[in-house]
Length: 442
Image (tube, rainbow, N blue to C red; front, side, top):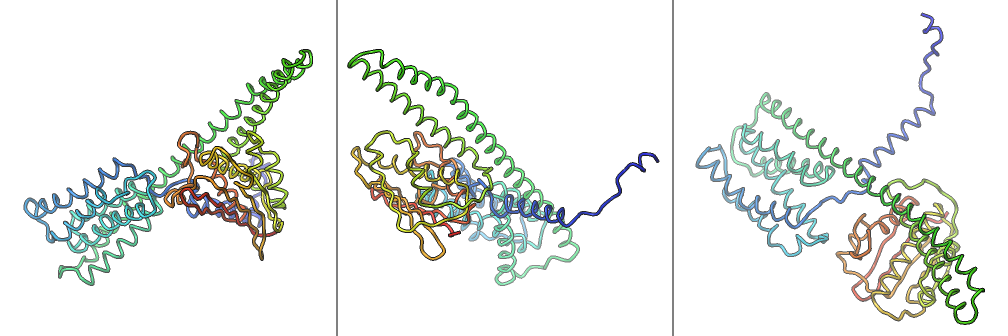
């Protein structure tokens, strides 16, 4: 009783609390459903696609034999089974479908084949066989297989559309078979709903597991990059000691010591800049939500002035041209990182294309028109094919397989999108590349 006397009275949620809960719900929906952070829709590998193609090509004729000659079912169609087998054969023989990375056309083909052979075909056969026990079990297994093959969002859309398409085509072109009664239909619906729910649950849990693994990987990268500060600080002290020691030596020896000290200082500065970039890239999944008014011209000029160019030739190859300055809302620190990432990629492309860069090989232009501002990076580097352009903004995908980690452009895209802007690329092999950042003018 005494405890009840001291307990604060219940107060209903205030308007502020309700709004805060709504905001958390909106953020969760946007993060988990609408805008999946880092998940390619498909994860095709050479052997995985080969195995799926072989099982589809061989499995359908084999099941036709089983359901016709061994355990006869009410309805089987050899022509349809052979068409499904041809779809499986397509996974084995269509050029480029097992390429890494796959092209957009290959990804679409992969998705279309499994939409036809899984939700559409199994739904069609389920209705043609009047919801028999065999096809009830087969349709339930299909849901689990489909959600395992692909991302849960695509599987949900594909399963729903495939089920509706199978039902519509059955009523339009299906055989004259008894319709599924109410009691049987209700029983089957409960079983299929359970299978569908479990497929969705497993898909969501796999999605969250991949996200946690990615967070752990990115966090580890950030820690490793941060730990490099200690040896670099020691190198900085050595450089300062060399600089102080140089005057005590005369003539050529002093000049050599001074040159070594400058090189060491420049190397430390470059490495610290790279560490800052990697730590920021490692925050890909948790960017700070700050919105300050930024001058695009000042942003670009400052970022280029602070960039640790390897030599004067590399510095001279970059030209900044401001046509019309504009202001936008965003994080100055994060957008400086974006400019640095794009500059680094362009200089790397130039180095791969030629050993003698010229002034203007990397042109950075700032302009505005109407309510939109643009920052455009144009380089004369090696360029890239259309298939690569469709993938370069995906995390862990890099055109530089030797040293690239594939986070820089994914980070750039997230920062720009957070400012309600867009980033796109236009390129051709051996014709350079043009990266365009478009932002709303504040």
